[in-house]
Image (tube, rainbow, N blue to C red; front, side, top):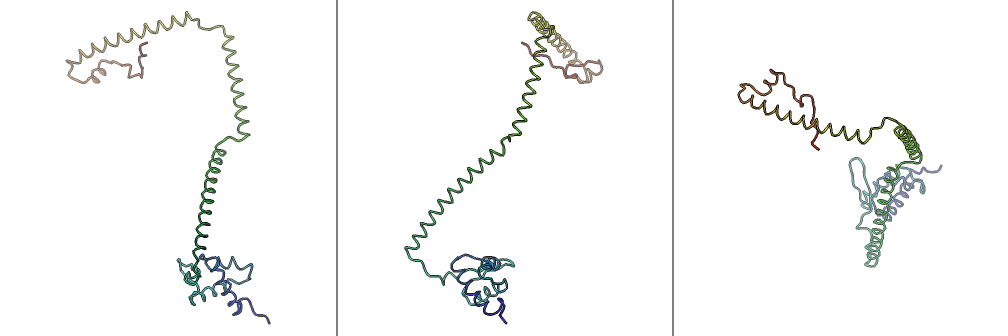
Length: 220
């Protein structure tokens, strides 16, 4: 009878593979992440992965840290070979190149986001077609209205307009003059009146322009 993948042999194989994987990647993984990354290639069960990681942590071959209910595992940095000066310079160069690439990508993303924003705020082809149709209808309506005005026979002549404007100026001047006279007269009466201006107006029955929201046109 063949042994299950969850047996001791599988567990030992899983530990070796996981140790090598954590050292090569040199970044933290949870048991679930490690299982998901290695399961297809090696066929380890999740229980075997969890057990192997715990054994490696107990043996001090990898480091373990708990974050709430989840644990993460990563290679012990002290057990990794020290990089030479040439390797460090090479890594610095890679970091610089990647940083430049990241900045270029970020700039490209910002440009594309701006373009997308402009496109989203722009009208679509059907919307533009509808807007054009509405404008055409408005133009037709205004043209019809203009033709009716042009063909009408009751136009006001310049002379009639001038006469109306002159009469309006005359009446406004007279309105302004009479209002000033009434105001001066009322102020003279109020000097000897024992009550307030409002009470006097109510007793006499005086109504002002302001009571009816009437405004005297500005002098021209």
